[in-house]
Length: 115
Length: 113
Image (tube, rainbow over all chains, first blue to last red):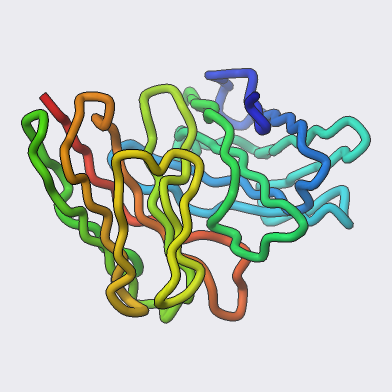
């Protein structure tokens, strides 16, 4: 049973528009959520995170929204830029685990931003 | 500041051969991890080390062994490689003031034929 799901394998948007990447989870014990970005032939890099005590966290063009009752989070990128084209992974960490690297990852969404 | 360094970047093994993937971090992190990523899938945890001297199994430990040599280094060993172990392997570390994100190496692309 996959505990973190990214149901859209790919997403294509026009430069300047909003990109919305979605993530669903099933484990109620998850309380800290992260988004990582991955370029080809590189390791993932941390992008933004959110704790379960919040419903929104913003960092520049990137905003993550958390809906605990629906067990759903989303990453908004506004405005999207061609350099944002990458694979985005959603990850979740349970309340009893303080090791952020010991996360459960989704399968990723490949974002393509067209000029 | 190198961050997390993995060697080698690429490797081809024959079935049954053994090899060790090396990982070192220079961020003074307590925790280190080995993940594998298969095509179209997310990262799956193989082993992790919460601190120097300790190691624990992750989601997919079978066929692997690890050694936390010191605080900086965490190696992953394949004793008898199988084609099912063809994957991209990532080492990561976390810790310090903000143990809230993991820092990843560039990955090792391993092919077992």
